[in-house]
Length: 154
Image (spheres, rainbow, N blue to C red):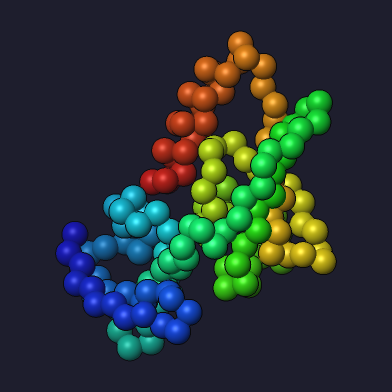
């Protein structure tokens, strides 16, 4: 696989990578995902069939605010507050998958599910995950780790 890239910053801190791709499938970016751990949406350039533009959203981690966890009998909950530049990328038509919210830069342990949209505050992402008993914890942790690895490269 051979990729020749150049990059530039735009006015809101994103990095644009212009890559001439030789024998690369556009979705095969596992190595790039591992090295930068951010979303790499792509679109085909109108100038060449082998030129792709990759936008990488690089927001400082301190701009994303994480709540403490809160609980009920069945679930544990938390919410995440996104800065305005990231909030505009939250889909309005559906709840996000784990891959989608991780691609926005949200970092938390596996197993959290985006379960609800609070329309007056779309920049607040609401998460929950099933509470587990102490004896089930090792099996659930192993399953979550396997799923996280599959999501990273799959």
